[in-house]
Length: 408
Picture (tube, rainbow, N blue to C red):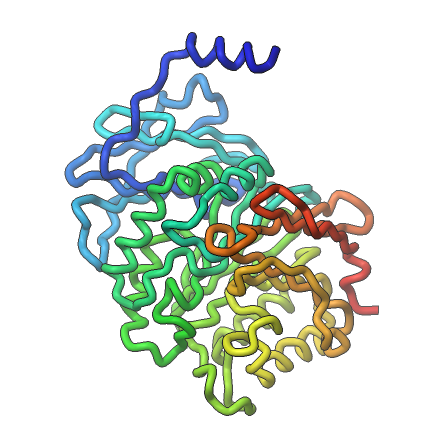
C-alpha cells in the first residue's frame, strides 16, 4: 500500500530540474538557535539567492543574499559564497533552498532543525564520522540519513589530498562534495568539521609542516564552522553548544610537536595556548556534557595519537580531576575502525573517561560510524552510543548516565 502511494506521488508531482552544472553544496552549518549559514559553490557569474522558511509552502517568498568569499587557491571556474540566515527560531524545523539564476532543484534544497537555547533540557541525536575518500563505497552516508540526526560532526580526513597546498585541497573538497550520498548529508544535516593529517597536510603531519598557514586559510573557506582559532592563537579549533551539551573541537595538528619527538614534558599535542583555551572553556562551561573532539585517538594509535604524548595526555586528565569538571566525553577518528571504550587511566580523571572512536565511514572494511543520543530532559542525563556498520549491524549499544561520569 505504501509503495503504491509513493509511486503515485512520484508520477503526479512535477520533478524539479537537475542542479546547475559545476555547483557544489549547499552545506548547512554553524546552526544556532536563531541563525545558520549556507556554504555554496557556483559557476562564475551566476546569480545566487538563499531562501529559508519554517513553512515549506512559502519557502521561496523572500530571497536572502549570498556573500562572495575570496578563495585563496583560485576559483576553479566558480565562486564560493556563504549566506547567513538570521532571525530564526530555536528548536524549529526549517526548510531552505538555493536558486541559481532563478532556478532551483531537489539537489539545492534541504532542511534542518535549530537547537534550543543553550542550557535548555533537550533530546537530540548526532552522528560522528571520519575518514572519507573518493573511490570508496559511499553507502554509509545513506544509513546516516536514515538515523535522522540533528547534527553531524566529522573529525578529520575529510579528503585525502595529503598536502598543505590549498589549491590541491580545494580540488579534493569540491570533488567529494559532488558525490551524491555525501552531498545529501551536508545538505540536510548541520555539519561541523575538524581536520586531521590527510586534509591538513601529509600523513602524520604536525606543527612543523611547511605551508600550514595556507592550509589553514583554505580550511576556513571549506567549512562554515563557528570559528577557527582565536585572535591570539591561530588554528582550526572552535566550540559550540547544542542544548545542554558543549562541544570543544580541538586542533591536533597546527601546534602539534612531531610524533618522533622525545616523549617528555616539552612534547605538545595542542600547544599551550590552545590547551589553556580548552581548560578555561571546560572550567567555565555550564553544560551537562562537555565533548572534547579531535582526529587523534587517546590510546588506539601507537604512532600518531595521544598515546605517545604522555605529558599532554596526563596534563589534560589531571586538570579534569583537579578542577572537578564533570561530564567530559572524548570523540575521535583516524584508525579506520569504530570503538567505544573507557580509558585505562581513568583514575587520573576521577571517573570513567569514555572515548568514542568513529572512523572509516567511507574508507575502511566495515564503513562504520557512531550514532550518539543525548538526553538532558531526565533527572540523570544520559548519553547513548551505538556503532553502526555499513551492513546496518549494530555491534555496540552502550549508555552512560551523567552521574557515572561525574566526580564523587
